Length: 159
Image 1 (cartoon, helix red, strand yellow):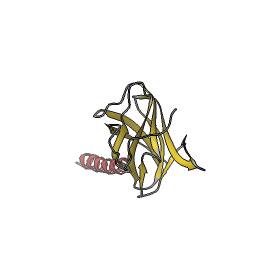
Image 2 (spheres, helix red, strand yellow):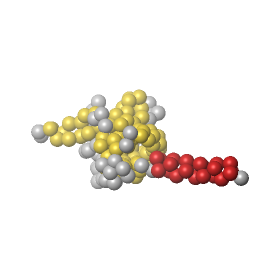
Image 3 (tube, one colour):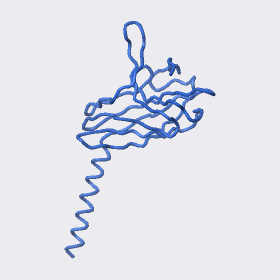
Image 4 (cartoon, helix red, strand yellow):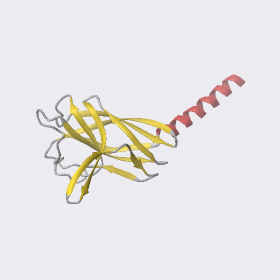
């Protein structure tokens, strides 16, 4: 009888621990921009929120040879884009990855991204010394559709 009670308690404790670890970062409205034939890059966008705070460390996807976290920002009168080593996720605050700002850059695409497709993206987030892997399914939206952030469908750069 004691062994059964111990195992039940251990199972409940483990389940509570795993649910607290898994629920640290949430992803809302993930999407990627459709491409045209021969286009080798696109962006993926979403909203991230970390309950306890953390950093987005990396991203990967089987549809792209290279995946980086990018920032677009004004440098004088010129909009410039650059890869960033990580992206801070302040505790409890939503962080928008959107056209014209931070985003996941999908480069060396292995195929055309068509509206209606789904792009799998793996995000790695670190929070309180723990790494969390998030499997995201980003819906591909047409070039002419407006993203959730009011984007007009222009990514405006070349690689």
